[in-house]
Every structure is written in structure tokens, then in C-alpha cells.
Image (tube, rainbow, N blue to C red; front, top):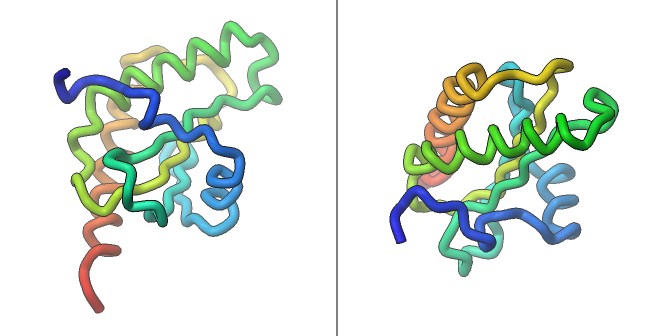
Length: 128
């Protein structure tokens, strides 16, 4: 398998872990995403775990929400190598814009988000 895969183990699915990410994690806003992140307390997992979300409030049709999540997933999949291998993180991408954007608009913003996350994880890993 190549490095451009998005395995099932990379998806953030456990409700308890998702609650922990939103309650204890830090966040930043980089249009059109609000990004939540937390160093993964379970370092046994070999991957960063990612949650992709589009609000039902902003996108009434499931078709639109799924389209956005598909585009975000593809942008993440192709650029996840920007994140350092260690420390592992829990990451949540919440799409906040009120209109459906094209992949060409989503991709460079995902790139910027991942670069920013890489910088933050490097700072978090440095011993005090």
C-alpha cells in the first residue's frame, strides 16, 4: 500500500474520543474550516485519526454534505504526508462555509491547515 491511502483506522469514530477532542482539544479557524486537534492519548495507534464534518444546519441535503466530506477526505488523503509521523493527533475538520465549494477551493486550504497542524505538533513535542 502506498502513502496515499485513507484507512478505516485513520477515521475518528468512537463517540467518547470525539467528545474528548471537542472538549479538551484546541482549535483554530482557517477559512472554510474550523480545525480541532488534540495529541492522541492512545499512542498505540499508528495513524493520525481524522474526523470530517459538514453541518446539517448549513447543508440541508445529505448529497451536499457527503460531497463536501468526500472532497475534504480526498484533499486530506493526498496531503497527509505533511503531518509529522509523531506525535499522533486527533484531528477534526468542520466545514463552516455556507456554500458548497469546489475541490480546487478546498485543496489549498486543507494544505494550509495541515502545515499549521504540523507546526503545532512540533511545538507540542518539544520538551519544556
